[in-house]
Image (cartoon, rainbow, N blue to C red; front, side):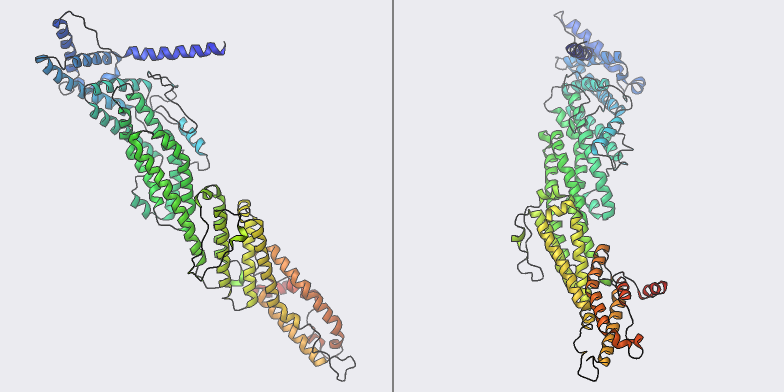
Length: 632
């Protein structure tokens, strides 16, 4: 079978299906010119059918529904059409027709409601929200497999009489699904046409909107969307709110792309052939306006809530989700009557962007003014440093979003003397977001410099700066995105900063120890042929021993957390200390050993000195140092 043959067969089947539904609908009976007797006879028969199904007068009519029996449907709709023809007839017939049409419309309203209620089941999403690792597309696909009315599960896609195409259709992101079976949709369309024709448009819209809104509300509950006012959202603690934001992002995609889109399609198919202008728009908004406002009120509450640094990334998640959804929102709510929904979504997006910019600015101020004054023990990495660098590493992961949101360079308040200067000429090729990250690092260093002054020991102050700036460098190197934004030029500047701090530490910590190993002050013109003052030499060894022991005791308690930096620092110390001590011993050992009690002055060998240096920067307590010596 050729492709063209397949296409022709498919098209023929489609028209056959459409024709079968259209010809099933009861049509008005043509009346010739046989006179009023035929007309009255037809009216009488129609009136009897209407009265038979008057629920106020018959127990049987109250217990049974017409639209469960196709033959009864055909008879009843024929009767309604016949009565409708006589509404404007003169005399007694007009009065009877008006009374009968009221009874018929009340009955059709009940039938309309019953069809809607019996086929309105919420979306089945029991496992949708439990898979946090699934992509939104997979979540929606999974949802579609488990969605639909109870009476039509597993049913194939069918064609509607309107000829618009598949009832269940999809675009790249929108997934319109069959909410109500095709036969029920056709019945609803037939009823709606007659109710509108008889002047019962408002009642039709109210019934439809009320029932379908309840179905949407049920789907919302299954998706985990709660009815929370803006005040309710703002009173939640942040931990609870984070969970709700994650759930909202997943649910909002399903609501817009599946729930709202499918409701819109259903409205079109039920009311498109009714004839009244924009009736499907009115029914759609009657159904979803309240739920849509409820859905977007949550995001609005987040956008106007109190700003704090921990909220930034969830706000960016919300922003990304909403900007991804915006084309779908504009597609689903493309009607003039739904302008308010589109406007609300766009305004929320704008406020989320402004909130993100405001939080970043407040974060910068918080880093600059973080007030803690208690020095961290051992000169290790300050909690502020870890927090800030982890924070800006996360910022770099949101680079695609923030590059569009952060449009201005950071600025220093001219009246604020407690803030550092920033020379933008050094990073003139950087964008606004990168400049903000560099500015945050700069003010972090500025704050850390201030905190370093709270150490009484100058060497420990420099070690603290070295540790923290080194940590900053390592965090930048560990993130490809962050490193790209900061740039190698500024990274080299930071590397020079921590190496400079290491140099300052060594000078402050070891200059006195090394000073003991100089020759000056040891030689004299006394009685020794060698010209060395033994008493001065003994004092020099005693000073060296005391200073080295004190440095070892204190600095074994200090901490350099990075193992590579720690080993490099120890090697640098030994490169200066070991040769100096070995040379000093070589020159003066004989003078001490030739005297009394040399062990009181030469207490440590070069090898032992090197072993002792290896204890430094391990964060050992005095007890741990003692235990280590005993184990050795």
